[in-house]
Image 1 (cartoon, one colour):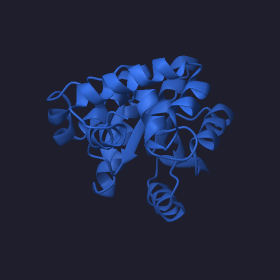
Image 2 (image 1 turned 180 degrees about the horizontal axis):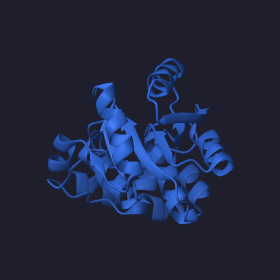
Image 3 (image 1 turned 30 degrees about the vertical axis):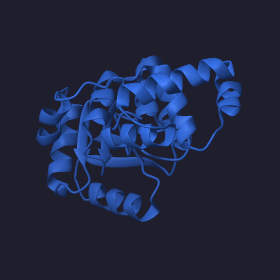
Image 4 (image 1 turned 45 degrees about the vertical axis):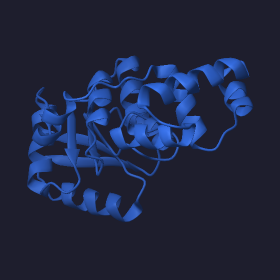
Length: 200
């Protein structure tokens, strides 16, 4: 039996996925979570074979979860199931040790087969995304990404500095670098462009 933790912030989607996976003879959902922090708690408690997670959720993102699983040295393998067909997300997911990356509009039998493949030690990556992922390099550093993400949430330079323990001048430098690299005219446009590419 392949034991799963399912992390998805939309309750209806989560319920439908759990029901679909429950129809498979060898798959068992041992816990469901509606946000990243609950998902991490469930992974620590149940030590599942697989964590099936969305990317964008309240609290920790699916990419954050994958990185935590990797850093903790857990045997749990991570599969991202998302609506975001963004090459930048896939690249970051692979760097975080994700073993599967699938789109929610894939047929349910493909999902079950992918989970079995990942459990057996393989990888399951949406083929269209796999091709796109190597087309465009992410120009942002991790710190530029953090600063830009907070700017996109409406935080001022002072607030960003306080949260990341940086001076306002350093925050402005990171924002200026990110804006320049993305060819944007301001921080909000840079945030929007980076999100579209899956770099945030």
